[in-house]
Length: 209
Image 1: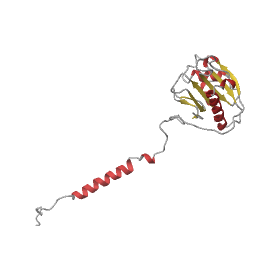
Image 2 (image 1 turned 60 degrees about the vertical axis):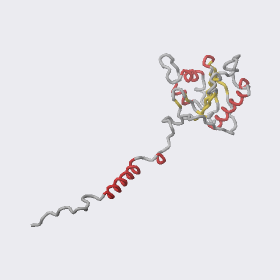
Image 3 (image 1 turned 120 degrees about the vertical axis):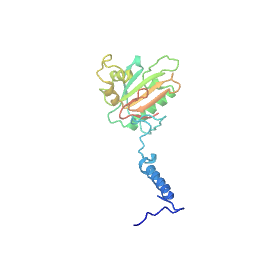
Image 4 (image 1 turned 135 degrees about the horizontal axis):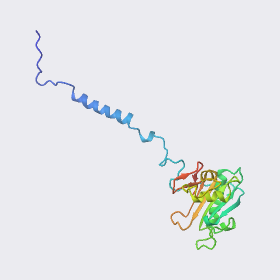
């Protein structure tokens, strides 16, 4: 009968340690490479889940000609003005009009273009203003300005309106907001409409300045 062989002194029994070490290293490499996604391969959606949400201060410049426009309504208690431009007005032209209004405000001549929203105010004729630009006559009315001025979370049962906030918001082509009492953000303008405070933005929203 054959007799079991006794371990020889000095002989290693089992898997060689180097094989174990290389196996662990290879396993870690697979884990890092295949399981943990690399950030550079991930799609860049920006820091917000809301499309076109403002990140810092954007600056869009247009050299297009300004479109013809008409001030169609004012809401005195909300310091708001509605503006109507032709239906064929492009986004680039809307930006040009926003820049035109901004330049006039900085030169203290905006009151020659639009009715003053804060006449006699110590900070000027447009110390506070919301200027909404529309390209459809049925929405370029004070009812739209009131709905937008009340905000996204105003209860509809208390403020019935023929133009709902959600509809008015999507019809805005451009928005110029002025608040000279806010030293950190005295003005802002955008294509479309958005509320930084509530995080509600129209589909066409894009910050201009």
